[in-house]
Image 1 (spheres, rainbow, N blue to C red):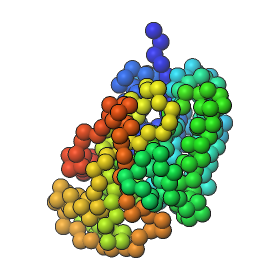
Image 2 (cartoon, rainbow, N blue to C red; image 1 turned 30 degrees about the vertical axis):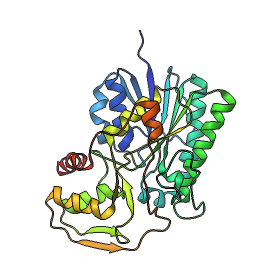
Image 3 (cartoon, helix red, strand yellow; image 1 turned 90 degrees about the horizontal axis):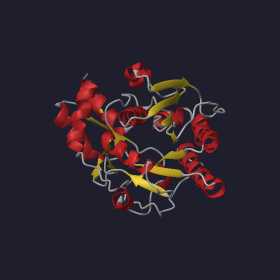
Length: 310
């Protein structure tokens, strides 16, 4: 029996590389597509020796032509860090629109299952708490974060259009804050920021008073949920994240405790349109996928800090 093939766009990025490993471990062939605007070759270097893994350097915003039989297209490519999408707003909009269109076109041509990596950012600065998949969001389309938020909202819309018009088997995962090994230290997201600053004994940068909340999901938990969704019959969006809500100040204290750092705190103004609260309602994932996160924040942070030390 021939192995099934999964194409993963953005496969050299933080989530993408873990997903490449997961698919290989489950006996799939993997084609990783990445143009390395934010991806890191080091993330997938060990996989290059695997005969079931292939890297194609390509910008998903350009037409994708691959002759191989492909069973799954996982569209993970994205500039998901605030630092990246503020530096590259046009590329962010392109990968969410043109990139999603091209990836959907490939899935349609190959009659493959398509999975879109969306985000909790589609909910914006939410007026509903916690956020269910039925919530339409509270987004500023012309704010500085609009390039990311709206590119993902468009990506969801075109994915559902391909499902309804072409009968394509599509999935949409809305990913909440995720952390773990292989994040870039200059990523701009709160967990790697705090860890890097703490290990270097630099001041930890807190925005506002640190009262805003986030829900932190360890990468292994997230990837397991994505894998279950990929093999499911679900076509509507599904939240994946850890519903345990922490304030930024609680996260600061945990990072300082685990790292043993003597870093001080520096308080800066809140960025424009920064969400005050972020917590997923994962009832749907629990019921339909039998999934819930198993790794506590302190355990996940210990593993992540250990990786950053190395």
